[in-house]
Image (tube, rainbow, N blue to C red):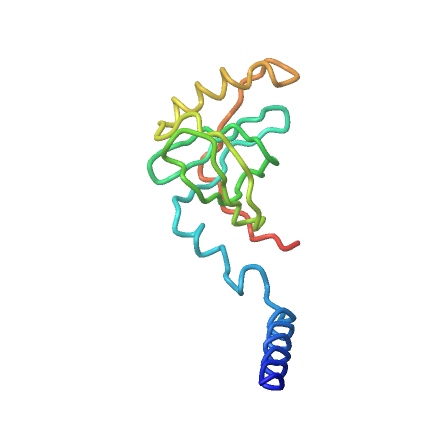
Length: 145
């Protein structure tokens, strides 16, 4: 009886030790890009070094986002919840990176987006020059790190 208990205990201990030594990655090979590509997409049509606000052209119009992370470039393709207000994560497909931003206005016409950017970014620039939102901005090629 003692031998059976000792052998069983050793086998269980060895099994636990071998199972604990397996190598697994954190995400088990799951690519998060598929999650983001199902979200709403748009192209950055206004980005300025002196202003934390960007304008994204979407299918439904223009969206104004206050950047809380790094500043994307004009032409970058952005995925995320672009049709509701609030602070949320945005996926930059061109850079393959995630940034944080606050959607302040959405579904705007070109004139409305231009008016909002002029008022929001007036104090950030070095001069009082009018900010211009570009139209027909081509998407940037995907950058690799």
